[in-house]
Image (cartoon, rainbow, N blue to C red; front, top):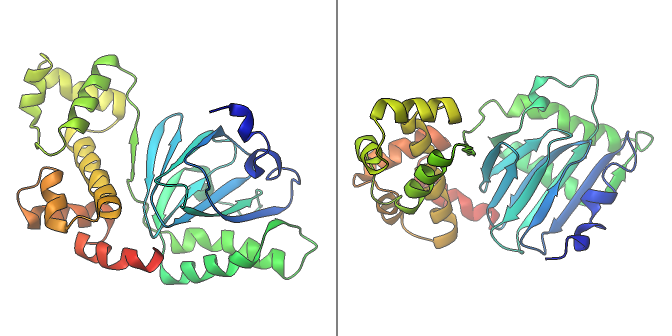
Length: 271
């Protein structure tokens, strides 16, 4: 697709037009890809009607329903929705003296009912909100100020990109055989490396163990299947290599924060 098509998009031309404004944008995606870009303002991104993959130079993030992602200013990222019908709710904030280290990191957080109400309240805003516009500006600023208070649990819904060529092959192997529950021993044998070398490779290149990486990969895949393919929880468990439904449910709960059955029940609130 012609890159020039993206030049006049709001996130390229309007978000940083005024340094001290808060910029608000609620709209259907209308496209299946937003190319890599960055802005000086920090971005709060919440989506409805589908899932979104967001990629930075270092990681790939998975944004499911009832979660938001915070993107600090200056971080290059691209956005890949599951369909053009996904609705994005964006608030872009300048830096405030009250900002904490919370706003320096890309992270994904669950959204509680209080924050959902606040998000929907912002639906009445479009474009720049300036400091002289009171009480609108103070309300919008308060939205940013409460995020650290209502976002106590960050979710590991992200996986780092491997740069090592051998590890890239290994990750692709795991992704295409997600239903097989590949063991560490089998993986080492398949790629003709010792288990010790493979363990070091995961830790050095991805800063996590094989088990940590593989578990998160399987849970992110499970989330996608639950949202996109409308499969039952039991079917999803089998598709990501779990023969035991209780084990799958417990692991899902540990990583995502709710049991898969609860997640399926709650997701319809925003679809």
